[in-house]
Length: 118
Image 1 (cartoon, rainbow, N blue to C red):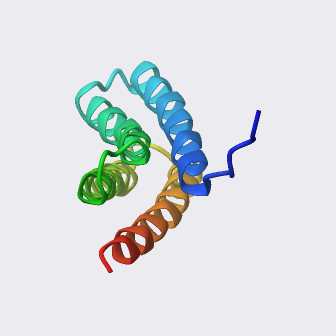
Image 2: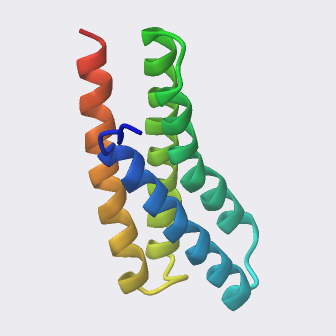
């Protein structure tokens, strides 16, 4: 069986989703906070899900549309993380690595969206 080439953005978004899942469950159990953590959980895991859908896209237009949704979900996740950080609901040491991962994912998504539009 032929091994598929590694898809870095697919792997990074999956790793990010795992981190977000664990972060949100900890956040919920520590703070008994459910509204913001559920929003972050939805948007943070949606990034990778939409990248997966894009990979299986039936056309170039479908591919770009799903990646654009992934980009928007990553931006939303960044918003929630910044809000949690700035309201000091979680220590910076827990938030900053997630924001750093997101910045990397956002840059990759932007480049892929731009190059697929040409």
